[in-house]
Length: 468
Ligand code: SAH
Ligand code: SF4
Ligand code: F3S
Image (cartoon, rainbow, N blue to C red):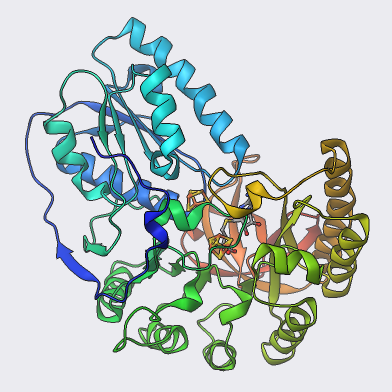
């Protein structure tokens, strides 16, 4: 048994990243067996689930969308906030019940929660009906673990994060038109509230030649859009002396000629002028940037370890708006960080008013064990934090709507990627600027970039018809 070491991620060294090429093993032990996978958390986890699905199908499993008839249930978990933890343990209760009815059912838990020592200990004490816990650094070994499962709880969690595993095109991608492409793993920023550097380890960049090969291959298969993924995409290459930086990588990805390129997430601290130049120069790099603010108070930004001031954030914001025509910018904001006063919060509201974001993901601060902020005194009552969240959301929604209204009666390109959930006569897709649009149109337009006339606007979506 190998328990995760929460401090291991802090022991940074400059050793080279090892590349290990793994070929999935083929066996017919699991032929016809069904797996059900449930994914919580960010795009990183969504993409990891695409890898897990492929690895399972390589050894004979088939996917089921019904957990009741699964032979294997995989829970890919997120640890970023406490409520993510509660959802997973709630769901595990249902799994336990199913296992009583079907003792052959196997239950596996992976993802960021698996990297938390306290979670593994809780599972050992109270949830030993789980068969397998595996971490974020050893997903590629899942077939091995399943083939060698012993009775009872198997724990396979590693805190060694020096490696990048190249699995080539081995992803069961959820979409035929848009694809996630990892460019780097981990995070070295250690914002004081955040657990990600502990669960995902230090920053490791993939080699640009591997990334470019993957993008070219996706283009050949007919993919229209790639989203470059990393916790801090603009720290790309910092861990390697002879690698491109993010601006250089982005430029080369643009040159592959794939129609649409996006990236998440960029940290304001690493956002260079060279990046802005590359984005404004290449029409296939989409004018959409997610630029997490977290707080508008200098005092709180400092306590959070964010490495920028409100002035610096606003300058960067202004520069991006000036130099990238029609760019949309969204953000993340945390309210109720330990010690946040009403005055600090008003500074946040002020910057949100000034920037008039296209959208924002807003959160109440959630203490995460092992992070520095969890030890900071926090006397603000939860009711006050909820009130701040509510006040913030009102402003955020006001500007989302105002920004969306600018599209009314205009024609904009939409990549149509699926059937609208609410109305099967409609397809949905996204504008260059990442606005969700529901479009009255023929199914044959699925997978195409189509000019759409916007006929109605709401806070969270647009409606449109195909421009003739
Ligand atoms: N790497 C990205 C995002 C990581 S997590 C970045 O730096 O922007 C996504 C968002 O969750 C963060 O931007 C932050 O707003 C929020 N978040 C992270 N830790 C949190 C915590 N302990 N409590 C509340 N929100 C948190
Ligand atoms: Fe977390 Fe900060 Fe890293 Fe983002 S940059 S993943 S918020 S530590
Ligand atoms: Fe959650 Fe892990 Fe992503 S903690 S936000 S799934 S990196």
